[in-house]
Image 1: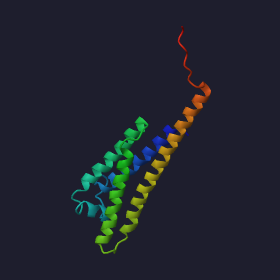
Image 2: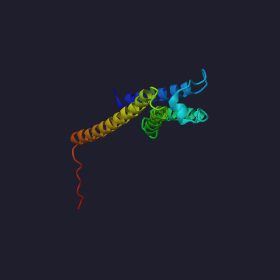
Image 3: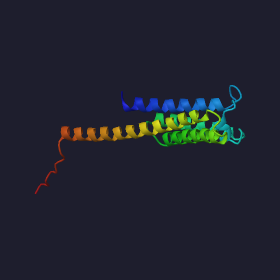
Length: 152
């Protein structure tokens, strides 16, 4: 599988995750459910629209990066929003005196952020090694660059 296919697949998955989060927390299909993490983070839902917009934006960044076949802001933005969302669930759990199961959702969001960061670092390292290998193979095939002495 070429890098372009894997890269586009990863960014498509990020866009899908972001846009499903946006739909889940918007009233597009139905009113958002009472979820402790987002309600804690958005002052009982008053600012939930801001976060819906951020989820949509990060998904759009992922599509742009997929089309350009490079990563700019989509991966860091995705890791950031997943981390904030995970921490909001943990904060809601602490705020509820450890009485809810919000910690599980928080850990899932934080885990996904960690997996995304790890995969991004691995892929970036592999890309660098493949580029160096291609350069080395090209040098072996074409030979070293030789200077031609000037005619005297």
